[in-house]
Image 1: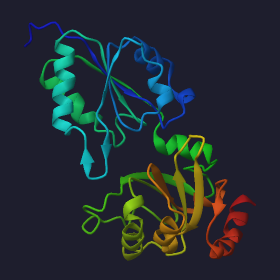
Image 2 (image 1 turned 60 degrees about the horizontal axis):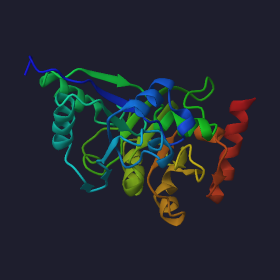
Image 3 (image 1 turned 45 degrees about the vertical axis):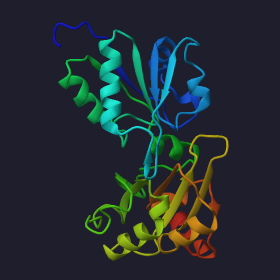
Image 4 (image 1 turned 90 degrees about the vertical axis):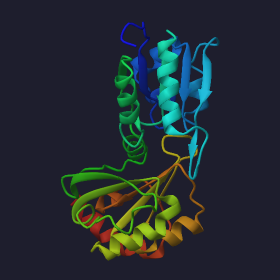
Length: 262
């Protein structure tokens, strides 16, 4: 395989949805690719930047249903590159933040295929920016943690040091398990009245930013019919967000925000 002439596999971050948040390099590679292997969450506006002659392959992943297993995606990228075609693996957000980019890099390396990673604005960064929610703030948080919120593993993982005073916790893929996540955090010592923001459809025209308290997170997600893609942000920084307050008890937290801003 070492003697085979291979094209480069480009793992490209498409960002959280807004095409204007693409890097210049990402836009150039999308426009010049012969084949684009893309996630289901990549917006239609971004896919429209591809050449009319490009082959488009959707490998969408949804909860409990993958159109193509990850191992098959890895093999597909290697196969396309070894055929000499210029391939872009287009991922929502950033390839290395819950994007399985590391697995795809490993597969390319093992096959002797050149690979390049082009970073994208992560869902957390893009969504927080639109909501004007600072993930760090000198008066509220000096540390940020990103975790995957699928229910699997919640009962065994210790999250006690990830949320609380001076910290921000950003939970990806946690909407379906929101009530379990809140219960787990409280069981691990996080105060039930810690502010929480939920960022739905970040950077898109229909984005919603909702605020509540940790103890009421599960009920709020159900009541407001929150859908993926959405992020859960736990911490005092949620008080800074431009948001719809969906819990009467939230008014009791406004003195906290006022103190932080004084």
